[in-house]
Amino acid sequence: MRDGAGTGRLVDGVLLDVDDTLVDTRAAFRTAIADVLAASVGDVDDATVDAALAAWRADVHGHYRAYTRGEVDHRTQRMARANELHAAFGGPVLDDAAFDAWDARFDAAFRGGWTAHEDAVAAPTTLLDAGVVVGALTNAATAYQTDKLVRAGLDGHLEVLVGVDTLGVGKPDPRVFVEACGRLGTDPSRTAYVGDELDVDALGAAAAGLTAVWIDRPGGRRQAIPESDVVAARAAGVRIITSLSELPTALGL
Image 1 (cartoon, rainbow, N blue to C red):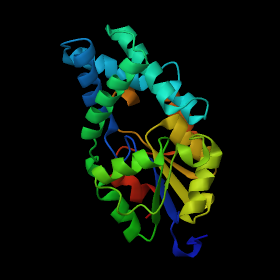
Image 2 (cartoon, rainbow, N blue to C red; image 1 turned 45 degrees about the vertical axis):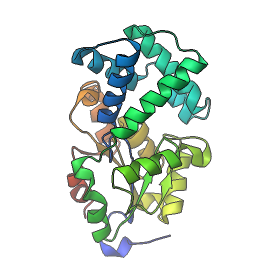
Image 3 (cartoon, one colour; image 1 turned 30 degrees about the vertical axis):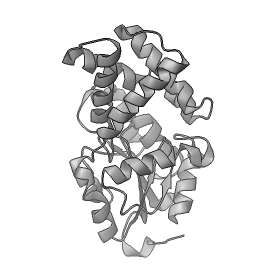
């Protein structure tokens, strides 16, 4: 284990979420949703695409969370969400063959939209320059996220990548946070985790004994979080930033 306790640093390692922390996944999802709706429903206006995107990301029946708990496979959750999207916005019911075509179209558009957040490009280098090791912990499969990071130009400085397939479960299970720290070579008490979801990322990391940092980017997701939850997060020791450029200061670097 690395030990920088005598250096004055608060942490020896930082683990970063991928989607909507490093990569602008929201924009990529919007591109994909617009594409599949155009093919399945017909011409849709921007307001409809925005509403469909909000529904997709809300996932009110928790299909993706079930996937991260190891209860269903990726295809099952994606097909359920696709059919719920169609039911809400006028698309046909997708059987196995129709879903395969839908998913191929969705994935091609989604991959084409993978770009880094502007503040993510310099963040790993800044941390490394401060003597901190950097890795990633994500609730998607490692091969898929590796491709995403490569396409976004963010793979070069990440020493480890732990995904939902590493242990068969994902965040907020404390085991995945501890596993990622072990692979990074840092003690959880000397490791920060940075993610965009208050519950799964920040509170999950805090419960696992890490320094929790919630990146509270402006936008629709933030508006849906009650202020009482934000107050509770602060009380639990969660550090809140609005940009990765604020991360070094938040960690005392």
